[in-house]
Length: 117
Image (cartoon, rainbow, N blue to C red; front, side, top):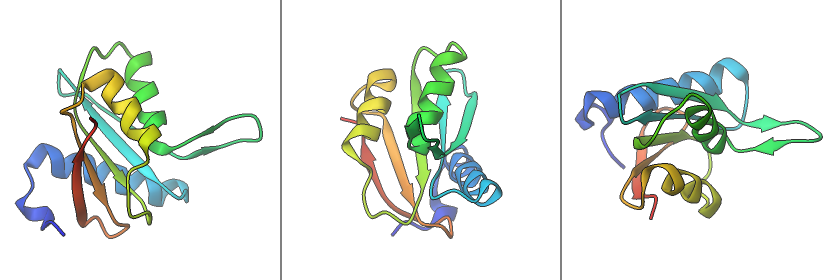
């Protein structure tokens, strides 16, 4: 586990935003990504009959739709123990294989940081 206070302030910010999205919307996951200009995009799980997206894939899609060219970092807040291959692939497609993905529990404690690669 990673002490969230030891995180870079910008990484702590995206974890906080992801946690807030999860709680505010009552969804299983919240996610946030930071693009190459420092802008953040926040999303929750999308679970419609015709459309199912994880929070992280939704946040990446929002970044792309807003004109982001790359990602600096991503965070997902979830009960899951791992970041899915599909989520990591979405981050990798926009940010590259070295983009860090922070996985945090519902309390905001970062459990692990993996790369998109």
